[in-house]
View 1: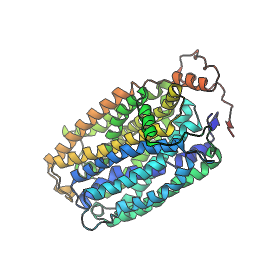
View 2: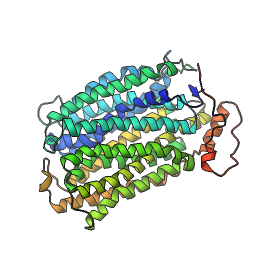
View 3: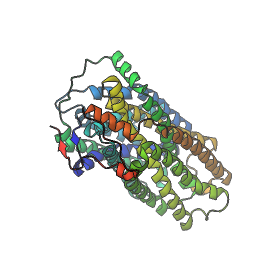
View 4: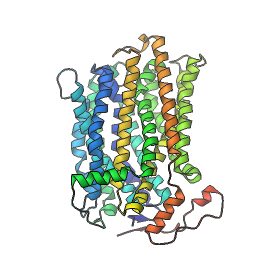
Length: 493
C-alpha cells in the first residue's frame, strides 16, 4: 500500500519537492556554467571538457543502477530511502565546492575533470534517486504522481534559477567577471550549502510519513544478482521506449542550456541587464508549466503531452534564429531584440519542460507494470535508470555543444564584439540542425509509450485486490479524471 491514499497533504507536496533543489543547483551549474568556466576561464579546450564529462558517464553507467538497486534493498526502521538522504549530502557538498575551486595546480587536465565530475554525479545520484523513488511509494494515483513531480520540477528550477540570479547579480555580474575565476569559487560555496540544506531538510520534513519498516526483508545482496535484476528491469518494454525518447529530450535540453552562454553572448549580444533578467524569464516559463501540465495530462495523457511539448518547444526555440538568418530580426543587443527573444523563450521553455516532466512521470507507471510481471517493486532501479538517462543526456548535450564550439573555431576568452559574423551564423545553423533532429526523435518515441491511464489504474486496482474502476460514461477528458472517492485522506501507519 502507498504511504498516502486520497488527496495528498499540501505540506507533503512542498517538503517533498524541496528536496529537488539540490538537483536544480547541480543541473544549472553543469548546464549553464561548467563548460564556459573550464573553457573560457581556466583555458581547457572545449572538446577536452566535453570528452571528460562523457567519460565520467562510463562509470555512472555501472554505478548508478547499483545505487538504485541498493536503495530498493535498504531495510531499516526508517524505510528504504531516508538513510541515503541523511548521509550523502555531506560529501556531495564538499565535492561540489571543489568542482568550482579545482584543487589542482595549473590548468586542469582531462582526468582531473573526470574525477570531479564523477564525484558530483555519483553523490548526487545517492541523493536524487532515493528522493524521487519516494514518489511511487507515497501515492499510486496517476494524477497525484504528476502533482508531486510538478512540485519537484518547480523546486528544482527555483534552486537552479536562484543560483543563476545570484550568479548574474553577485558572483558574475558583468561579462568581464564571467571570464574570471574568483566569482565561480563563491558560486560553488553557496551552492554546496544550498544542496545540503535541501536534501536533509526535505528528508527530515517527510520523516514522520515515510519512515516505516519495509513490508518485506530483501534477500542478501550479491553483485551477480544485482546486475541480473537491473538488466531484467531495464528490459521492460515501457522503460526501453521511455529511454529512447527521454534520452533525446534530455540531450536537447542539455545542449540548449549549455550553449546558452555562447548564443546570448555572441549571437544576441546581451547586456548586463539582459543577463540579469534571463533567470526571471525561465522562472515565468516554469510557473506556466506548473499551471498547465496537470490539465494537459488529464486531457491527453502523459505520452501525447510529452511529444507535443518537444515539438512545440522546438518551433519556439528555432523561430528567432530563422528570423535572424533571414534578416527579419531587430538589431541584436537592442531592447527590442532582447524583449522579443524573451517572449519566444518563455513559450519554448514552457513546452520543453512539459515534455521533460511528462517523460519523468511516466517512469512511475513502469513500477507497477514490472511488479505485475515479476512480483517485485523496483522504484530505485527504474529511477536510477531515469537518472542515468538524464546524466548521459546532460553530458551528451555538453559534449554536443563543445563539438559545435570547436567546429566554429571560437577561441577561449574572445570578447563579445570580436566574433566574426560568419562564425555566428555557423553557430546558429549547427544549433538548429541538432535541435531539430533531437526533438523529432524525442517526440516519435515518447508518443509511443505503451502504458495508458486506464492500464495503470487497472494494475493499481488489481494490486489492491478490488475491481478496476469502470470506464467513464462521458467523453469529456476532464470528467474522466475525477476520482471515485475524492473525500478519502488517510496515511497508512
